[in-house]
Image (tube, rainbow, N blue to C red; front, side):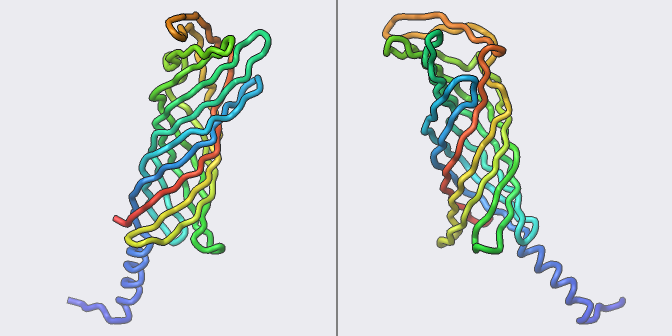
Length: 220
C-alpha cells in the first residue's frame, strides 16, 4: 500500500479546513416593524405594521451566504378618498418567505447587503371603508390574490453577542402582484351593513414597504 507523504497531506488539510470554516449553518429568530404602503392610482398613506418569524443562513464561501427569513408579515396601506370614492384602509397578514443572497462587506466590518425574491401567502385581509367618519369593516381575503410576489434589497450589520450574533436589517420590499380581484363584499359597522364592489381593472394596487428588523442567530 502506498502511503501519502506529509507534503501531500497539506493541501487536503487546507481544503477540509476551508470547508469547515465556510460551510456554516445558523438558525434563529427575527422580528420588527414594517413601514407598509400601497402603489395605487390614487394618493396613499402608510401603515406602521409588524413582522416576526425565523431566520436561517448557510455560508457557502467566506463572504457569501443564502438566507431564508420565513415570517408572518403585516402589509397594507390607506387609499385616500375622492369626492366619488370613500377612504379605504387595507390590512394584510402574509406568511412571507424571502430567499435572499447575502454578501458580507470587508469594510465596514460586520456589514452586509441582501437581495432576492420573496413569496407571500395571504393569511388574512381586512378592509376598512370610511363613510361619514364611520369605518365599515369587511373580510377582504376572497377578493385578493393568494400569492404576493416581491423583491427585496437591503443592508444589515452583525453585532457579536455570547453564543451567537445579533443583527439589524433595513430592507426595501417591492411587490409586483396586482392584489385585488373582481367581486363583491359586505362591510359592517355597528350592525349596519353596506355592499361594495371591487374590479381588478378599475382598482389596482401593489404592496411595498421598508422593514426594520432585529434578529438573533446561533450556529448549528
